[in-house]
Length: 392
Image 1: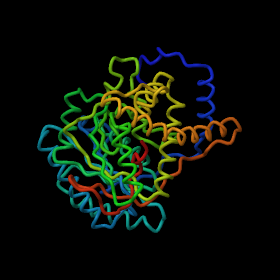
Image 2: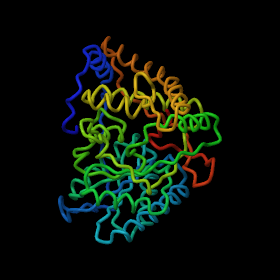
Image 3: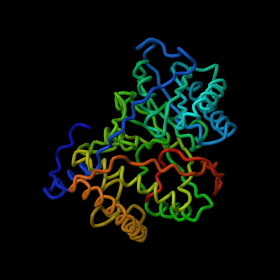
């Protein structure tokens, strides 16, 4: 965690609640898994050619058709090419993580990964083939490679967001200008799909201004030291883990190590059908509670009041940044969302109190939509990324 986070004094009752919530979640699984590297023998000796940045794209064999994955990857290669041209002195290592789940999917996953690697044959590229699900498994495999190669930075881009031109180049520039410290992220541009749930959540986000003022895991670049050793088995949310590591509530600007780059923009689609969206929101809320229970109190307090529920007066500061009317609308949306948040917290608290902890934060595994291009309102349906932020 960031240094200097011990100024706030935690109330005794709240400390009790947070301890019980933390005990209400006790995972039994592990993110460690065997990884096959393609092409064979691609990894050089540890520490060779130190410096540079690693960029990983996590995907799965079941997420799209081979043609759709090739189209997505070609677009990504274009953005990587822009970054390499903007920074010809920088080593940029591209990693493609292809997951499979059922044993019969492994051969197909290997074939797809090889096909994607062929598209980037003239670059510095490594394929990671591993069993899924869950994005964090691929991230940890890539973090291990970045540490082995002594790369200064590592970033990842979800396969269902669309980067604008020079997005990646701008992120790399901002990261290097900041001394390759902390994390930088793209500004997220939400779009509604044809689903009613998506349209409603899109409108709620416009009012509530959700927690998007720090880098999120759909498009992020950070110092490798921030995630050294990988994301622990307890945690599923990658951007939550990074936020907790770098948030510094004692500083004049608590988000000074978590920087958004306004000129770097990515487009994504908000939620999808109602049933799967409910499962995804539950997953999101579980992650919020797990981190809020685990973080030092000053970090948790700042995140709750200034990021997650900013504007939900009187539990959080009133947000007058856009006038009184907007402040009232924002507070109303936040208060509509809060009972769901409280219900999930109560569940974890009771589980911790009774010694019946939740053993996993289940992957929602529903069909979602690809990110639309600028100026469009809907997008075609594809398989989901590991974590979109559907709640206000």
